[in-house]
Every structure is written in structure tokens, then in C-alpha cells.
Image 1 (cartoon, rainbow, N blue to C red):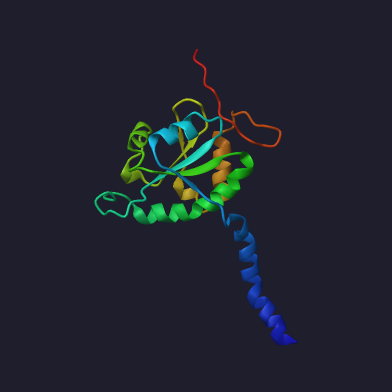
Image 2 (tube, helix red, strand yellow):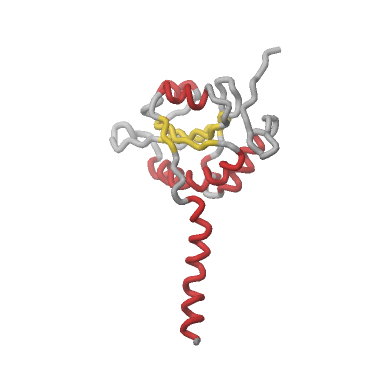
Amino acid sequence: FFPAIRAMRAIAPLVVALLVLLPCMGQEIETIGDVEAFEAKVINSNTVFLVVFTAKSEDETKLKGVNVERCREVEGQLAAVATELKPLGIQVVVADIDDLGPIASEFNVRKRMLPSPQLFGVRARSAEAVPSKLFDKPDVVKAAVEQVLVENPKTAEGIYSKITLSLG
């Protein structure tokens, strides 16, 4: 009788961990591979995007000045962040700085700054930085994103869309 209770107590934390991680399993994070795809998907869309600029290269020369360890750490946290943001209609994608050099330059993203999460919540060519240090707590990322999007339109289901800025 007691060995069964001991066994249940031993596996209980594993079951809880599995239940917490299960929603994140299979969450595929898209990588945007070129400037044209970025323009079509992120800039021209009405969907709000959290784009995480990172460096995916294995080439030491291309990684000079990049905090590779931090990039990989944040990349590992993206599924949980995407799961947290999905009910808000916010898509999380990855952008390799080497594939999207002109876009990274336009939004002032430099290799020494990677990883650099940027929230595209307006239809203009503008983005708001979201601190990558928050990514270990997806609920805190969600709160930070909602704070930035406070003036964005939101459906009855809680889905955000981009604001169209007007002049004057």
C-alpha cells in the first residue's frame, strides 16, 4: 500500500509538468525567410505580429558580436510565448537577421542587440521593442504586449488588430 503512495507522489510533479507543457508541444514557430515574405506577412497584414529577430547561423564569422546563448534560450521559450499570445490573435515569428538584413537595419536591430523581439501593432512601418528578458514568463510577456496594444482595436473575442495611423 505505501509503495503505491510513494510512487504516486514521485510521479505527481511529472504529471503536473506534462500538463503545463502539453499546450506548448507542437506549437510551430514560423521563420520568415526573406524580405518579400516579411513585407507580405508582417507589414501588409492586419494581424499583430511579435517578430523575434535572432541569428540562426552556425557560421562563427556571421555570429561575431551575437549573444548566441541568449538567442537559443529565447528561441526555446517562443512556443510558450506563442501559446500565451494566441488567444489575443498575435502571431509569433522568428526572423534571422542574416536573411532579413535590410528589414533589421530599417528597424534598428543590430547583431549585438540580439535577440530582439519587436511588436508590429500598427500598419505603419513601426515596431515596439519587447524586452527578451521577459520571455521566461509568458504571462508577463502577454501583459507587456497588452500594455503596448492598449489603443488597438479588439474584437469581442479579444483578438487584437493593427491600428492604422492617420496624419494630422
